[in-house]
Image 1 (cartoon, rainbow, N blue to C red):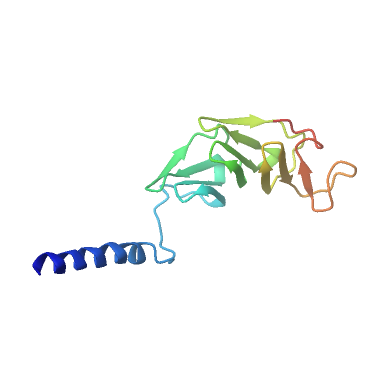
Image 2 (image 1 turned 60 degrees about the vertical axis):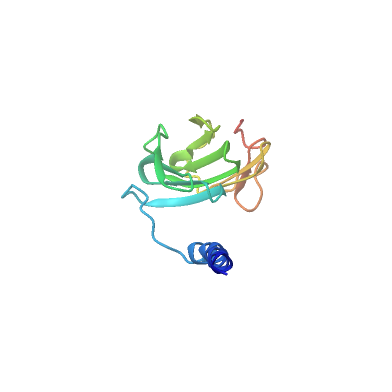
Length: 153
């Protein structure tokens, strides 16, 4: 009888832990930086990237945030990827950075305008969103395709 009661209690605890731990509520986290963050993207809850002021890039591994070396001091305004090993960050003065799972490296954008956002559908189709339209090369949503606007990966 005692073992049955203990088993029921343990099962109840096991079922309640996920509910209380992952209740869907937003909770403040310590990012480890006082810099303003402008963009966030993740491939999973254990692989999240945030970008911001002065070239700040942070990575969350499901436990803690870590600072990554971006190699730039330009503001980074947007981040997106197709996987945790294929991530783009964009920002001030046409800055584009690519993360291959190991390092961030710069890419040539062909512009000095600020890039505010990036969307990656797959490795061959990244869209960099800026403040202008480039007639004949970019669509009406102010979005530049990698292949058509001179940004080669």
